[in-house]
Length: 132
Length: 188
Image (cartoon, rainbow over all chains, first blue to last red; front, side, top):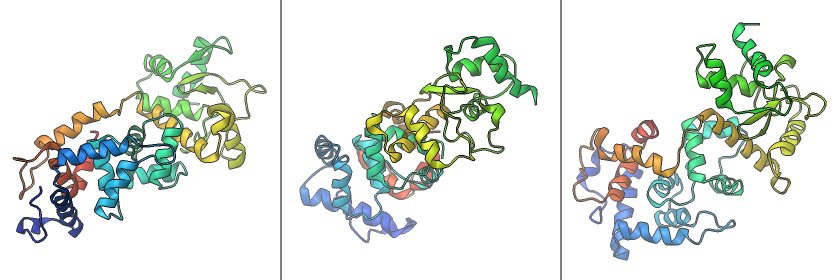
C-alpha cells in the first residue's frame, strides 16, 4: 500500500476520483512517517486512549486530519471496524433513522449521546444502520 | 376488533392479574405465538403501539386509540399493565411534543440527563433495542461478517488482490473502492 501513487493505471476502473486519492494519501502517510498499516492502526489506538467526554473521538479526528477529509464516512467505518474507536458512521440508512427520531446528523454529538447513556457508539450506530 | 388484537387484552387477563405483574416482550411473543402465527416483529410493533409511554407508538397507521392504552414500560423491555390515573397520561399523536417529552423524561431518563436531545436519543435506542429483539451487534459478533466480506464472498476487485496486504490494508482498499458493496454485505 506504500506504493500507491497518483496516476497508477490500476486506478482507472474506480468509479470516483476520491477513491484513488484516498488510497494514495494513505500510501503517502505511510511513506512520510515510515509506518506500516499495523503501526498506523496501533498509533490510532493509542490516540483513542485519550478520549474524554469533551474529546470523545480523537482517533477519528486524527485520521480525518491526516486525510484532510471533508466527508469522513469511510474513515469513520475504518475507525469502527479496524481501530475500535468511538465513532458513529452516518450513511443514508442511518440518516433515515435519525430523521425518523428527530436526531441531527452530527457524528460527534451522536457519539457523545451514546456515551452519556452508557452505550457503545459503534454498536448503537450499527443498530441505526440495521433498521434503516 | 380482529381476534389477533384480542390477544393483548387476553394476555393481560391471563398473565397480569396484579397491577404489579411484569413481563418482557419475549413473554408476550411466546404467549401470542402459541395462539396465532405472527412474527415476533409484528407482535412487538403491536406491543409498542399499546405501550402508553412509548413516544413513537403512533408511527404506523392507524395511530393508537384509547382502547390501545394497555401497557406501561417501566424500563427497557420490562412492561406491566397501564394504570389510568396513576401512570402518566398516555402519549398520543394528538398531544404536543412538549407534553410527550416531559412524559418520557419522567419515565426513561435519569433527571441529571434529561435534556431533550438525550431523551430523544434514549427513546430511539430503546425502540431499536426492542425491534432488534436481542440481536447482538457487538464488535465481536459483527467482526465475523466483516471477515466474510474481506475473505471473498464478494467478487474480488479486478485490479487488486489481497496477496501481500495486511487485513487492515485490504479492508481500507475495499472500503475506499466498494463502499456500496459493503453496505449490502454488512450485517446480513
